[in-house]
Length: 304
Image 1 (cartoon, rainbow, N blue to C red):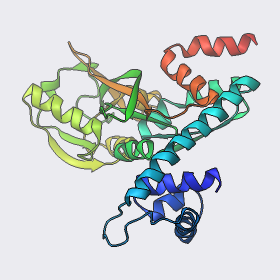
Image 2 (tube, rainbow, N blue to C red):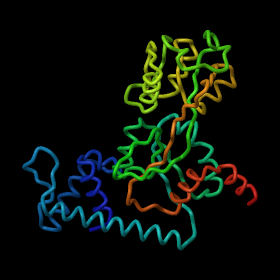
Image 3 (spheres, rainbow, N blue to C red):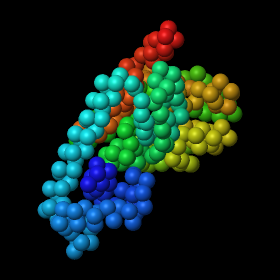
Image 4 (cartoon, helix red, strand yellow):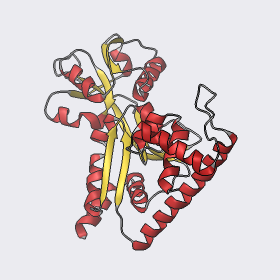
């Protein structure tokens, strides 16, 4: 029985899905079923209760899962410690994040990190916020980056930094010549927002409720890039993270207005599953993302 067998079995139990476990391990669904039957034959036990419609472990299966998790933890811990002893930072780091962070916040950190640790490979997947949490909890990725982090007993949440929310309008909009506005000034305006389940949308809804104003929602999108395109053609206004509109503002495609008298912040955070063994490479990346001193990190690279 190889360690890979226990990894596949653990993924199957945690996802309760043969197809999901297959995808996580780059094998076929049939192969997952075969692995399960092979484990049952090897230990001479019934692991999954097939009399139930939903996925459910037998008592023996629960014991096997608990022991499998302990073995996987010790294996990952040993592998991480051996890498630290070699003092070589290498391997692949899988990151899951929403578009606004992955496209506009993360790139300079990734560039600086890979310059210092060229033996590391970083893979970034762009996902909806709820999928980022699912990816982290299922152990299918190493790290997640989200806005307005939600507490969860199985998650470690580490502050990344705060972004500033700004009002974004077309150069043709009546507010385009204004440098700053009070939130009540946009009451009744055609508004382009995110879909209801997206954290930034929930935050803007809370802002409008607090200010006791109504806006005219005309469009909803699931990512920041399409919101910006709609604002560019003057279909409405939007409230977006300031870092996501730097290029469009410089090119004159959008006008960015700050809010008077109050700063609205969007907290960003790094998340990973509690108890997960972190490789030396992952630890180094976490240190960088939570250091709040990217310039010092880059200057250190240049001196070397």
